[in-house]
Amino acid sequence: MVLNMATIQIRTEIPGPRSRTLMARREVAVPRAPYNTTPVFAERAEGATIEDVDGNRYLDFAGGIGCLNVGHRAPLVMSAIQEQMEKHLHLCFAVTPYESYIAVAEKLNALAPGNFAKKTILLNSGAEAVENAVKIARAYTKRPAIICFEDAFHGRTMMAMSLTSKAHPYKAGFEPFASDVYRIPFAYPYRNELGTTAEAFAHHLENAFKRSVAAESVAAVIAEPVLGEGGFVIPPRDYFKAIHTICRKHGILFIADEVQSGFARTGKWFASEHFGIEPDLITMAKSLGGGMPLSAVTGRAEVMDAPGVGGLGGTYCGHPLSCVAALAAIEAIEKGGLLARSTAIGQHFEDRARKWQKKWPLVGDVRGLGGMCAIELVRNAETREPAEKATKQIAEYCYKHGLITITAGTFNNVMRILVPLVVTDEQLNEGLDVIEAALASVTEQKQPALSHA
Ligand code: PMP
Image (tube, rainbow, N blue to C red; front, side):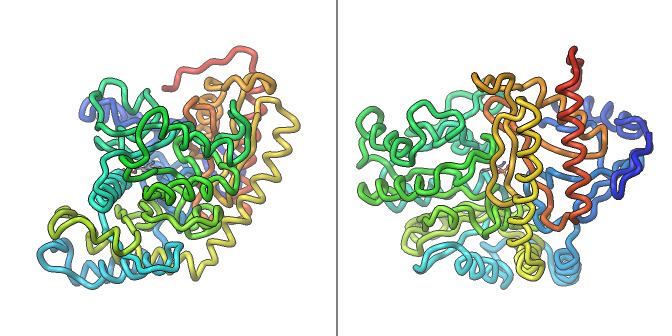
């Protein structure tokens, strides 16, 4: 099958023979737990496109789960890495420090919201950033408890998993979890039960101090400003101000987990800016590294300095290649005008998705903050029963027609857009056409035939 489109080119049945062979090897050599969204193996990638090992070309609306806001192999990132390779690779910042680590810290201190002195520590993954933010908050406040939210995702390491909300597949079987973790409902306007105002949602925090944990035992509240894995849920605009005010009243730190929502994804450097908040600590990762593994915690200088010398770190944290890639990725966002581009992508998505919503009751909710946008699919527009099966079918239709997408949501019924922000208008429309065709196909199908897991 060959689709006559600008970017997408399907040369073989999907998955093609080489991908099928690799998948057979993968099944023998790799445990089943690390999930593969698509059964196609990548050969190369550029901008917003991926080519698989069988020569099929796809548009990439997943960006390695939001890691490629500047696009695959962004030229500035590539040349920075090449240049660094001629100098040195791993040294370990704890043994022989190097300038690029400092330069990234300085840049993040300047970019993060808040007109106060800040410091930054670099790490490898989002989960590691979350683990460290919790350690820092506990060291500073000398309190044990952390309050997190339903529908949150913070990673797969012990503390991050304990803070994560979704039981299957992230938590079941991995008990016991870290102690002193308390969970309250998130502001999820589409699925609210207690009113949709910021105050109504924020009231859950005050309630927790009565019902679950004394306020004076709480070190921090951790929240994603826009839920990532939880389904791109956007709280009311004054929600986090209300939460932060309550935190301040009780000497509790507010940690914004911007691992997925940061670095231009929402049309600003950090989603926190949309909500007018200045978090005490911010965790970041994914698109910070421009395609290389890098994460960070940036926060108030006095808070960041609470752990003692040697209390934080790790062998590979702030790898030199990742540091130069991050500096280049930040430059690429600045020079490429990617903040404005993200906003424009979000607007365009919304215009098209609203039309889908009018046409198909399956599209229950359309939401987004800049280029962090999604549709939530329901079996019934009144009851809002999640359409998990249809969502899976749509994702499968998409990759079979040349569009890589990923789903999200506690109920597995959200199609989310994490397209590299360097996508062209033509490519964006091409990808949205595939989603539209998928929605039409699933809506018209009487007998859902789904075998892909
Ligand atoms: N926090 C958030 C908000 C995330 O979206 C993720 C990853 N999806 C993580 C933490 C964990 O990041 P990592 O997979 O790099 O450990």
